[in-house]
Image 1: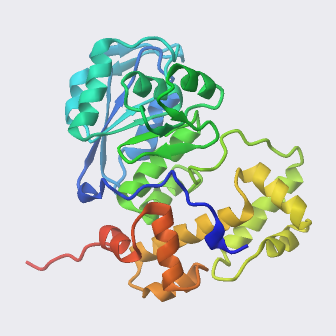
Image 2: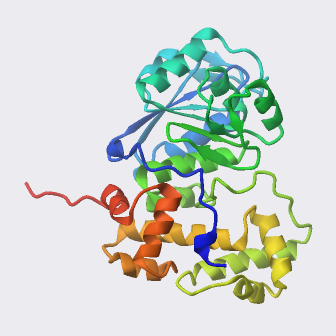
Image 3: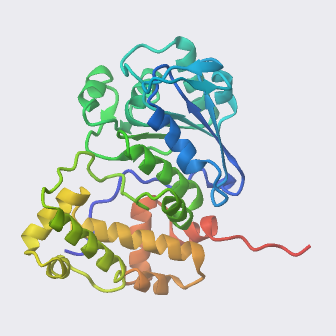
Length: 339
């Protein structure tokens, strides 16, 4: 099966927010009452204090002051909803109970921020807040798999996808629960600053550098730790050989499994098929090369296993909607002009 037959990743979008990618981007995290502290902290952990990706991350509540959390301790929000009026990105983490009606002023502030041009994102059941504000109507969205049926039933105008890690609709981004919030934050970095910067941030926070948004949320794990270790080693082996014409048979031989068993175990462990994983890894490698080198497009394609410049163009447009030249113009380091 040729990598070009892999279905397009509908979660990825062109980097619409990149004009300001050299300037500090203002991210406001809206903590609603009984917020989950882990999810409130994710944007700060991933986005704040990064020289590679300049984000100004701040916390707000429905009003300034203490915000109750599910952890038994309060957070102190230095600002209220007025902070959303100047945000470039608004992130709404999970809170409980997720289905409760929100105050009209909260919904109005979210609508106004979005109408003004801010990107709005949610982590886990924070999607219910965006749905109440009407920001998910007519859009594809996700949330924690356990609560996806409720989101779909309560908001029939929303196309709920319960099986993915995150969904990027350009100006509205939603993610699944818990660790998928880290994937969402890294996806924002990748969208705003490129693959090389996102990979470096992931390394610093000790996270997987890139999990495709289309990967499955609920991944049943193999009870055999030896098999998980073998497949991790096989993925590392493949990443070191992306320029080679790798096949499922090659991966199976390295893992010492039959092709059928390899495919089943690989999908169970990663939530995606071996060939789709290879294609995503190759596009990710191509993005990094486009950002950090001046190599011709045919050389970039060869080094990441996509074959030709035409194939590179095809896969990059399919993944993020831009051509290699457009991507390089956006994310390659700009020359410093002599004064």
